Amino acid sequence: MPARTKDMTRGNPTRLILTFCLPIIAGNLFQQLYSLVDTLVIGQVEGVTALAAVSSAGWLDWLVLGLAMGLAQGFSIQVAQCFGAEDYDGLRCAVGQSILLAAGVVALLTVLSQSLLYPTLVLLRSPENTIDLTCQYLRIIFSGITLVMGFNLLSGILRSLGDSRTPLYAMTAAAICNIVLDILFVATFRWGVAGVAIATVISQGVSCLICLAALRKIPFLRLSRADLRPDAKTMRSLLRLGLPVSFQNGIIAIGGLVLQGVVNSFGFIFMAGFNAATRLTGLIELAGSSLGSAMGTFAGQNLGAGRLDRVQLGLRRASQIAVGMALFVAACMLLWGKQLLSLFINDQPELVDQVLTVGYRYLSVMSLGLFMLYLLFVYRSTLQGLGDTMIPMVSGMVELAMRIGCALLLPLLVGEWGVYIAEISAWIGAAILLIWGYYHRMRHLRARISAKAAL
Image (tube, rainbow, N blue to C red; front, side, top):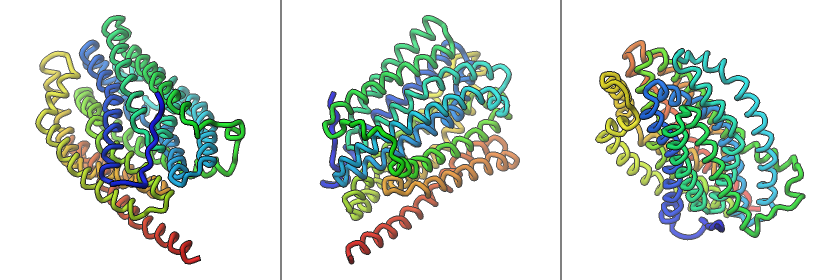
């Protein structure tokens, strides 16, 4: 299936952003089916204990895989800028060096994640009845780091070239594969949490192969041996973009892990309800994160073409779309959130009711602050597309400080509600910094372009 590149430096920004964003939303929706189907099958077949074990793995999973995904996202920024500037030699070199860097990162993360997994779970005060199951699940997931990095690198390159459809097809195929294998491995073979993890890794491999096949059909992306020889200058440029994004993901995950430790301290029922709700978080966030991805590509290509006016107009339109999407998703969660949560839990009626109460409270609080999260995604991705990955990294530190501070202090004042509020407090703090950072970056870029024009 050939990739479809798209030039986003010409045409109506609103139409371009929406038409580029919608396939990403659909693709991310299918990708979220990984975790949702995992949660549904494991909760219905194995019960609340297995559900809590898989759900509590979320932040640790994100800490490791988010580092790989952040690097891949950062690498794609340079690809988008080269494409917008029609620098195909530079584009091929960037892709080749990205592959070399990705291989080294995969080896390092695989060794560290497998060796430090169990001590980390102990440090997080994982309950005795779930720690072994969580460890079993994550060992299998981390064995597939190569596939996670491969898919994110390849799909990031495709999106940088304006192709958001091929990643959609890849994630759709992977989601279907994941559903079939979940039912086979868990409901039929009764492999428990190991079956869920194996199904996820195999599905990631499917999505990776589809993106690779599409990239091989792009004529100007045929790499030579020279493109795959280490190039220190290009590698430094890629790492300058990728490391801050990766570090940003890492520090956000650390904040989430601290929050998970606080959640675990409230007991098994609170942990099960909170973690069940976090399994819907990806579904809640996907419209905003997808819109952010579209703006990152839009900003990157237009910066390469020297069209800052289009970046400004595109951001204004994307912000309006973001607020509208957030209000719609929040309304859906407030109306039907409890019914959605009930799909994941099958146990004693009294236990299920207690778990649902905790989960719905968390969903309700998140829904009220969702518009700030969507704006955070839009401004962060725009800054990254403009070549600034430092301020988004600092915003991750702000998010970390807000999440940890609120998670540790607010429960002393308002009990479990402090855990719920900690999340949206982190969003608000990070979003404020990113909005300021965008205007600061634009002033800097305008001054630089004006200075060049005066020469």
